[in-house]
Length: 126
Image 1 (cartoon, rainbow, N blue to C red):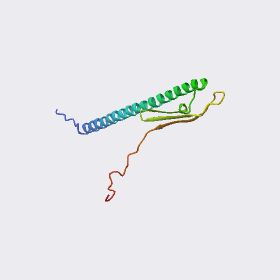
Image 2 (spheres, rainbow, N blue to C red):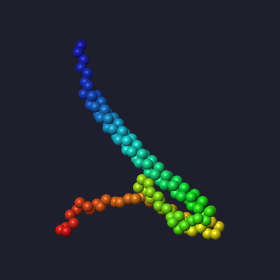
Image 3 (tube, rainbow, N blue to C red):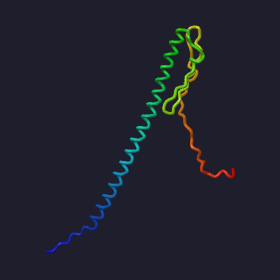
Image 4 (tube, one colour):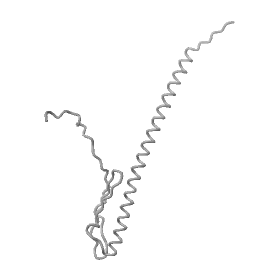
């Protein structure tokens, strides 16, 4: 007896399953890598911002000591701190007779310059 086994439909099904699994594995790897890159960027930004905040708090501690000793000048009431493309601007009011003051400005900004989307367009005869 000679039996013939037909593998055509099973082979096609297995090839399709293998292609689908390969595609899903590739998409999973790409998504994982993109998530890792975004997490590292977020960590760097958060670290830079926290370091600026810590430097700002140190500036306030130093200002407190100057205000307590009565040696505050107008130049001592303003600070601009920079780190990793971020700028923290601090402005403090003049201390009153009791040494009390107010923080007038605590502004953390990202230094960002947008690319001109029209830089490659011909602007006419110059």
